[in-house]
Amino acid sequence: MTGELPASTPSGTARLNRPRRLAVEALGCGLLVVALEGAHHGAEHLGVSATEGRLFMSLAAGAVLACLTLVLQPLSGAHFNPALTFADALEDGTPWRDVPRYVLAQLLGGLAGRLVAHLMCGEPLLIAAQAPSASSAQFLTELVSTFGLLVVVRGCVRSRPAATPVVAAIYIAATVWFTDSRSLANPALILARAASTHASALHPLDVESIIAAQLLGAALAVCLFRWLMRPTTKPAPRVWTVIFQSSRDTVAQLAVSVFQGLAAPERARALATSTSEGGAPPSPEDLPPLVVHLRLAGEPRLESQSGRTTWELAVPSLDAPDAEPRLRAELREPIQRLLRERGWSRLYAVGEPSHEAPRHT
Image 1 (cartoon, rainbow, N blue to C red):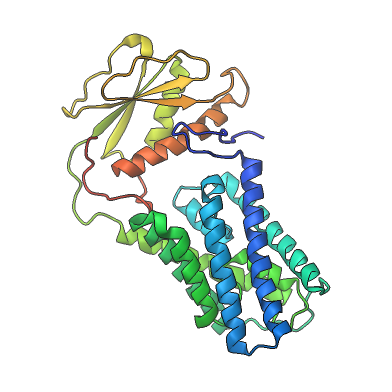
Image 2 (image 1 turned 90 degrees about the vertical axis):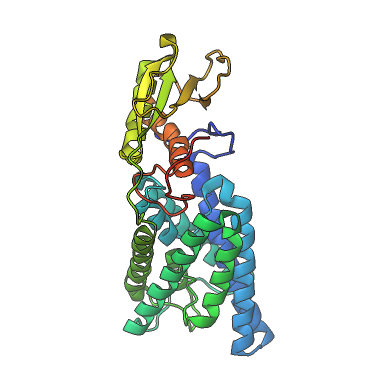
């Protein structure tokens, strides 16, 4: 499979290849469904009231989601929700070619979780037979709950990223109380609910309209934050320069191509040089350039110099047919991280520290 990220990124953060990331997404969705449906069955088995039943589900969903997100976020991003994957792709986070794979893994994980939950509770897995019941009120409910989830997640990622798993879990637990839906603003759970014999299950013919409402809510939240995060003052007329150095001209030029596609041209630009050329060319704006040395696997390490950063690239032979897409995928994440840290992103993606004038570090 081409275009996969390496097992470890240049920053040293542990990452999995694509099949394993998809397995993590499926696992997260499956366990979330098991927790929600297990709590619902437990409440019915104990004969508790409707109010106590909602308390069971909210505590189970919130606690399990917080645990799963805290543990699995470094491995796959811990979306566990096609709406979050869709919103992340709109913000140029998840590549669009990976969106169908992520969504399919999440849906299959939710269905597997439904099967496990029914087997645990001794219930058959059948498609619901009641008549379709989706209404404009339910459509609006799903839109609002998903919109609120994306507002909470995106806002927290921008201001308090470390608290995102806990805040998202608290919001999800609250949706059990202020909405009449057990989908938790998650299209994967909508599909899982359609495969049930419960009286409160969703009819398969209602799935399409409710998922459309959730995706619309996610898109509205992304548009809102793009408007909120747009700078109100004109950026300082200074263009920063990033120099990509490599022993292979092809690698440096490819890094420049990825950088120019993601960076705001009025804030930063990129140049490519060879390590054999010595020092980096001066920046015409008299701003000290940031030099990034791209070290391929097996190459000797260069002596550390002030103002130069080294990115380790675990790329295959550049002669391989899929070398360019693999290298582009590997360069994308560190470049996006650099742009977010400096405030140079072309799209003002939620999660960037600040869009004030970049500062030199």
